[in-house]
Length: 411
Image 1: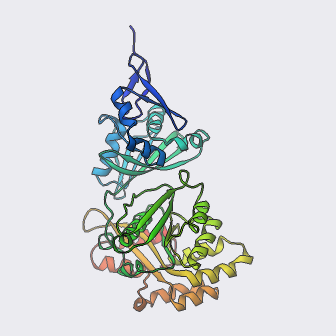
Image 2: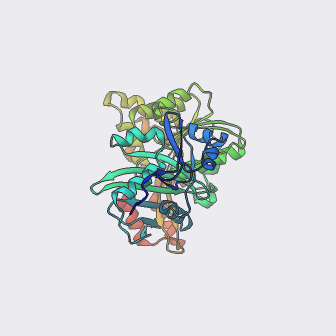
Image 3: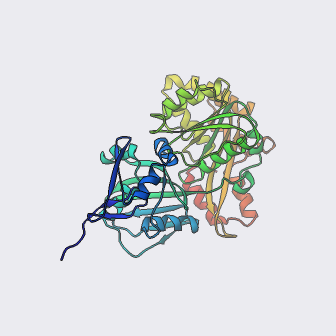
């Protein structure tokens, strides 16, 4: 009995193509694209599709019966924070900290590899073939936008997909402190959003940019890996650049940004000595620099910045940081007890004269004490904010203790 052989998938609609079908193939940007029918080929060749592909911001379409489409759709509709697709495991959502399996079927290597081939950007193909972990942004037509990470583990390939909200929330909806309403008016200096992975740093940063965009005329350059939230120009002019597509690295993007007449430079992540050094330089030279950093608390963020540098440069860095620091907002997400969802817990360190002097004089260990008594200057610690959340019936003692343990800091 003759069985039709599957030769691939349509690069537009993801329909399976068999050897009996009249597949159509074209080359674009050094890559072969295959289509199941003339209609898909014409759609791909439309002006918008080619522009999206060239920019690295492709909008993908799937057959509605494709399992990956269904699971990504469910991640949005069920308000999941993450979707995990792994060889040897069932497809799983993480919803408010609880894992929910989407199917009882254990995924095999070929299935997960096919999913990866459907969405992997062309500029990431070689890195993936070399065994590297892959990060990119992905927009699914009629579903939404995701941040995708592809990695390998002891059983095989894995995909971690994080849904990104359709609409950016206001400061009140996010639950950030009122001081943010004044921070958006700053013209220079350094503002950091810090916290562990999955604490909502990118969402807070995007909402901050959006608030500026709604009220002021600024030239904003972002350097991201990947671009997560797409920001439309309102009153500001925004240029979003993705590492790997539009600039080789954060450091290269920062260095170029200083020559591109920005008012605000946004760094998706300050992750190494060069990017931190360039960010401090930009903040010193009259720009407003916004960035994220992985740290458990505001004090840890300062220590991490200083410790990146060799001992002979640390005195200079402390002077730069003391002069440029405007605010550090450290944050974490805590499961609510009053209703489904997560509450935002924060601590705020303001770059006051007293705090600047402590940084300059290497007395970083004394900063927390100033934060605890700095309510008049709109500072607070995690402990103080979580006490407010408990008093309001939003979280309980168990959640507070869990966050303390995660942060590994004396709060």
